[in-house]
Length: 608
Image (cartoon, rainbow, N blue to C red; front, side, top):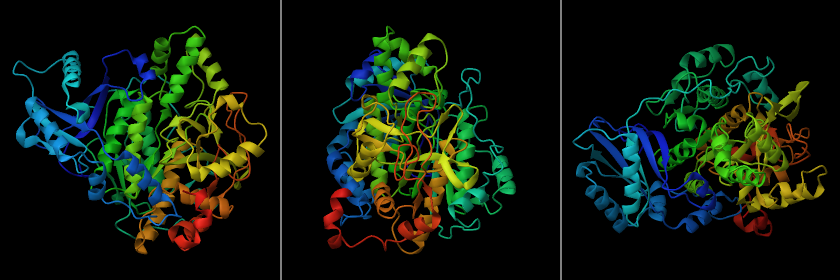
């Protein structure tokens, strides 16, 4: 549905599986149904109705993959020829007969005929259904209902969501320690004007194009306080235009949860560095399970799928939240089983840790990647925080007895990548801090962790990274044991910015910077950058320190005895380094440094 439309918004998702959780380790796509609660559509009466959403099997995914890389490759003739919504729907959307099959199935379940709705991408069909005459179903009965639907769903349907109206679920503040986010007293030196000064960016530079749009997103208690934003404006960023900052759902955040701090920080940073850019703050799911547990992955999948089907989409999306990748969590529990602990007990323990394992399976992250590709192909630049636990943790060491000790030992033996930042289809942003003065950046370390980085266990290294990363691994001394990481996996982060409050600060800073670049491009009649990693790596390699200043001090080991050292050029701590505004404008605000296709052939192999 489009932003501001009267279609429903998902608020809560719970996994409904017909097999033990530990079996998900052996499956590429977890065959679960999902119990979802949502902000319901106008005219929808949750006392008598609920909504069913059938997600359909997508087509031509190999072709989407090819187009995504062609559109993102400066050395391809299709570069920046982004797909329209209609072209994308024609490519991956369901065939007419599949849509009709899904509609008929929903009608057979009691859906109101007038409520049937096909998404703009033709990949979901939703409808409202009356509650039974004898009253609302219990949660247990709903789970049984969804298991029954799974057994009866037609071939065209991949999985089903049920949406019910629900209020924000309280977060158990005593359950997990809070991360120190959103504080204004991290250091007097790290003001908005000083950070901009370090990057050579004028403090009064403002966007001028009304079409430029940026977004931050998070579930649970995610949101922002207008009072906090006003105070930030008064103290640090007087030109911040609060009228340009808006919510795009009815969920405006709730104090008491970590994600509320995240939302306030995200909003302050992206609005300060993307000054005068229209900013959407989005929370599409208010369940407690999405705040710190496994509900997060489905909330992200629901959001990113819905966003990719909107007619109006942001040119820039910043995502600060994430956790250890599903592959990392699976490895932790497999290794724990070798040490005498059951995988079930390990998984249960991990779900008691804050924001550690929030994805159900590798199949779920693959599905999320499809939506990332759709957005990139449509012209959206997605930025993701690289994590705050170096190359070993989501944040810091595990706490809580014998299982924590075992998992800490395993986590230090291996490098544990996080997601979504390790996705090959987004730009990963690490963190820096200053040593002595703003002219001396080093890798950020703090809160028992540090700037996240490493190599994905699940996703292969894209070709634009291969030559540089192979050189780093071949020439750098003091690397972790080769057996501890996947040296052929997607390497991250790509770039970095100030992250003294964690990479939840650096990501929206970088996103805001590129919103300003986008603003200049749109005003010059140029298309948005979309997925910019291939171009970014090309510029950084061939014009050293022009657009990104290398950061040569730091290590990803945090509290462990091994990690990736920082060095000249790219490294898994801060990527290519911190932004240099003049170079970013030179190489990204126009396309003058991109050679014509016929002049690129001999070097295209590096960037395809």
